[in-house]
Length: 240
Image 1 (tube, rainbow, N blue to C red):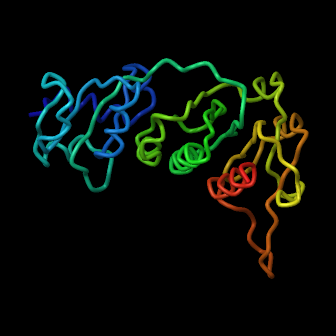
Image 2: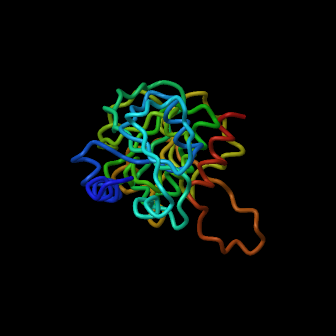
């Protein structure tokens, strides 16, 4: 049985301000929850409609019915389980290897997908502007499919971070160098811009290396690529 207070707390965690106040977030689905349990994330409590997750101690687990799960889920169709975790303290950024920097990415699905891509391509650090969607937004957590446990994500003053780094900085622009004809290093920072407006002007002025993904369509009317799709292409080229 889940209490009214528990329902109130869990549903409040759909909002960023209550995640910050309570230092908690939640994840749904067996795969995502298992990935988080196997990592350094600390479990607050697990709610499940099944007798699963045997490794979780009884005091941190509640068996609930589907009706109660529907009251706390953020999904259109509830999964079989939901777990509340503590938000960890942000780790220090390791300025080495390949780093993805995100300038005002607003769509939770895009951030989640970029995390999965980073995990796939061995990128350990994602540096986000303060305006980028919150990492612990339920839709972001869901879209990462567990990669949130393996990629370090920081929200910082991105202009200051780029200004002070010793790594080469690359940005994606419509008028940049053709990425398929550019010699790319093994380490550096790749800046990806906002879905609607691209990279901000202030940040653009700090970027020395401009890259573009050329269009091959005959009509050439597609304005731009989805930011997550563009990230996939760029990471693939850096890892070639």
